[in-house]
Length: 607
Image (cartoon, rainbow, N blue to C red; front, side, top):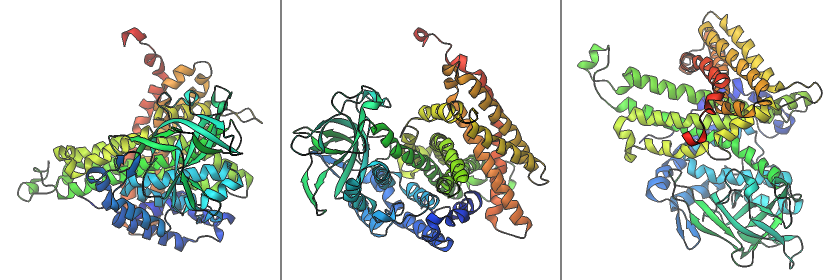
């Protein structure tokens, strides 16, 4: 079994050279909070905690002691509890939180990098603080001051956990089908009684935190039957007294936990509210705005689920590389020396292809994720134009970070199994766990199709500038910038071949975007039939753009006298990506623009 080691070289490079850490730290929001040296120390310490504390419990939660359910009580392994306690005591849980509630207020970009480490070390463990901070995010933005003061400090420091409760047995992604009810509590002014069942609630019950604060979507009496009739409620496991101490148990229970393909170290709960008198909850914000409020949490979660894809892909690559360096198997094609002096399978051409594929795609995913995280910080700029542009980039990139990163992680972790050969299919080697763990990420927080429909629709074909009437202006402007950079790089004496590949890919993305804008209105089904390939194309091209920018920066540093092997590796990795992934853009664009009718062409009885 390999041990996780945070890819600090790539993280630092992307933070400094691509995501704009220097400018972010200069923003008034962060200028007095953190400096570059502190960020570097945080990364170093987080890397140690991830490898020394979290990584060892990953296999424990998966195969040795996953959460156990007994009469509504869920217990986790002692190792999980010990690490969670240490995680909170060391301040890792509070990093993203607002200082007003005991958080550290660090930039999104820094939190993103650190959270990648937690997810690489154990996605199941990392889901717990992720869901809590997502709930914190929603409460902070939409709840009353009274609710904020009562719940946020303990949630920020990790003493209390948080969850999001959307899905019900009859309602998957269709929130209009929600049946959970909320009625005013006649005995307590301002409170409501919640009744209903929610499923797939990640870390919905456990014994690592002393209290759990559930955010629950429910309908008020006589409310609109659609989305506008859904409200959001804070429903604590234990009531909180005025002095902050815990009171009686609320009328809610975990009626079961799911038996899953992966992420077995986390408890995925079926939550039952109001089996007796009704679970008491408090309305967040205004009635009828629950879905909008919950999407504050979901959009936060979507970026971080995309990060899960990046993180597990990195872990699978490291695991496969370690095996490829050790495993001796057969003579190497074209290497006569290997017949008498055996070499590890890393020297086999196809194993090198698999590893290069894993490495280059993971670095492309990371580049987009870090760029998007940096834009989240830049959106806090005091310059309205800068802030507006950055926020538009965040909104455009969110479905790509979520959808393309998670879909790619399935391929990458599968390639990790392939590197191991037959032993990859055996649980003892550990390769299969990463494959199993990441599979849920393409379903979490809206499936890939939901992300793709958002990307091609609301973020592109339905984005209209109210002042100018321009459609898809954010996507068009960004892809124009990509094409201009590609033209510049194509003239580079050392990197021109990469630039030419990027030129062709950028042209394909621009053509597909123009087709989407033209087609979406009159033929929405045809456009939507190509939405997932369009998402894939956007990810491939934007990943190639940021890798190519990285290669250009690396080459300039080498030309100036740098000797860092990482810089040489970045160029080689980018070249592989250009020759193997950017070259696919034209074919995918044809799939998007020509393939829709064939998707819809088979009559239903013939399936």
